[in-house]
Length: 158
Image 1 (cartoon, rainbow, N blue to C red):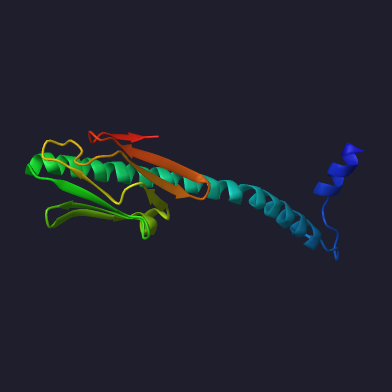
Image 2 (cartoon, rainbow, N blue to C red):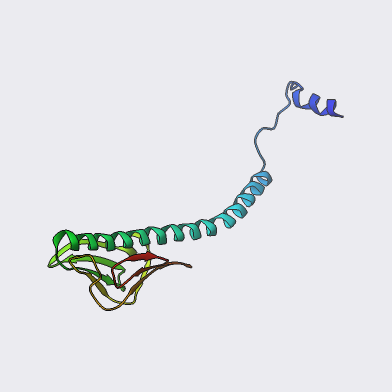
């Protein structure tokens, strides 16, 4: 039986006989159907993974901006402020009338911004200048991350 099958595979073609090469429409349809099933499973997971990456990147950018504001306050020996625009998801760092840095988080990462206060300030010694703690919530899809700024000006990710 095995010899007969191998004999057919390696048998020489007789004169006038045609040899079929390639794939049939049914074989192509089966391969495409399997590819569609695998893609249907993988695409939602990839989108979920991408949302998590973008939230992490936006959180890192927020922490970086808060650190920039604190360091600028100490370096300039002046009050610096961080403004949160939750409608357009933009964070801006000010020192007096100068804009030190501006990050449009929605345009860069596609995240939504929620805050408990619209701005915070750092005193010349790097301590928080104001009365209350501030929470910044960054979200995209089902993923969210929170950055908390204490009264002392310390930043914590949670």
